[in-house]
Length: 158
Length: 176
Image 1 (cartoon, rainbow over the protein chains, first blue to last red):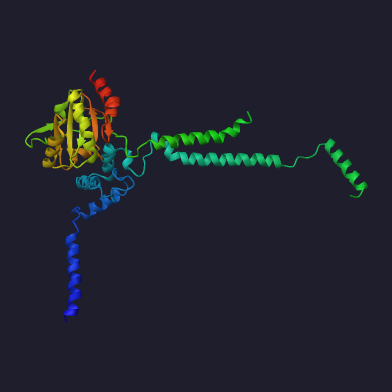
Image 2 (cartoon, chains in turn blue, orange):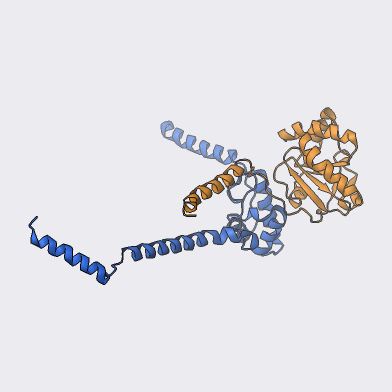
């Protein structure tokens, strides 16, 4: 009997240790707000580790900001208002989707302009090449010379 | 004229290289603050040295001052601190500290051993005022003018060069 109880006891002990070892993650009371916060935080950049979202980052500032977002949402602010709150403090850089404004026109339209420009250049180049390759009818003078050359050929076998 | 067109790729290459070369010297961690030329966010915080005494932004209106965000756990603050202590002696501009996410004991010990360049240090243990000022990496320093408007933000430690090239000329201009 003890040989069966021992593994079970070990499993239970491990589980208990796991439970004790994990620090409680502060989560909001309201699961709806928690969901909204996490969705929004996935579109926001953590300024400490810049390639991570606020949702992913373990940086203390990111945790503080998640808490701040929770509280703003509890006060009834919309996602847009929360974004504005963060942009006012940290700048557009916190947004993973940069807003469309005069400063970001090049960013938004640059690739499109390059693509259209490239295609236009390609199209023009093809047109010109085609014109160079197009058959030009011989003028009477040239035709006469060509006929003369051909008939000369016929006279003597090559 | 006809040969010029062969220079176009070279020109494009040089322009691209120019931008990339400039990019080598730009620190991606320095994010321009949207608070420049905006009113400094209001605060009322207790002082590090005395939990019974508060200080607010509005009490500092009418003079040019520096807000230096620091913390006893911050390694590069240590490097910056000596520069600040020296600078405070010149009396060019009053420096106020914002002790960010710190404990009073650790902060007092830090000031005791390394010297205190601050007129007063504000105690911001949960970093709320830090968030309002858009702090994301300590140390950071703000130059705030007589009307309470933020004029300059230094991200990262203040060096003698930064003082000499940016902060001192700016303070002189704002005081003029």
